[in-house]
Length: 137
Image 1 (cartoon, rainbow, N blue to C red):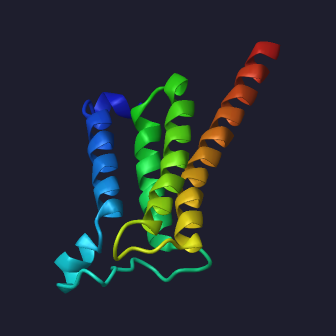
Image 2 (image 1 turned 45 degrees about the vertical axis):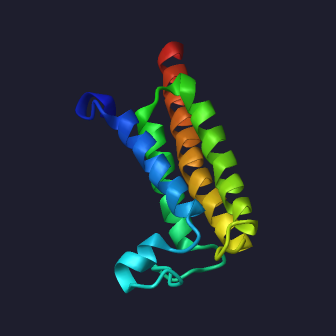
Image 3 (image 1 turned 135 degrees about the horizontal axis):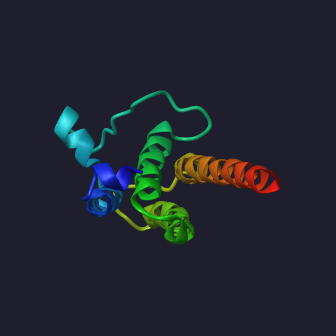
């Protein structure tokens, strides 16, 4: 559906993935430097509630981009990759200077991926139910 309108969608997914990894691995906040002139300050989109909202938004956006970029055969791989990288990148904060591991960030990453994955599973379930009803008629 989206591939017809966006022939370079996979490239955009790869670039977004690269940018997210760079932002995660940089020892400080690149966005904080550009917005506030301070590498120690992290911009906040909305208030956190149990999980880090910035992390939920970032991983939801990246996962949605992956979802619309690939066909159903590769989506299982894409979801698995994004789920694993959401954990791995946060665990790297144990060893990156000026960064700190936080469970709220980890759970935000995972929640961002899971939201789109649950949407995908619901959509697949509804489509399968519709197809079964058509076959019965």
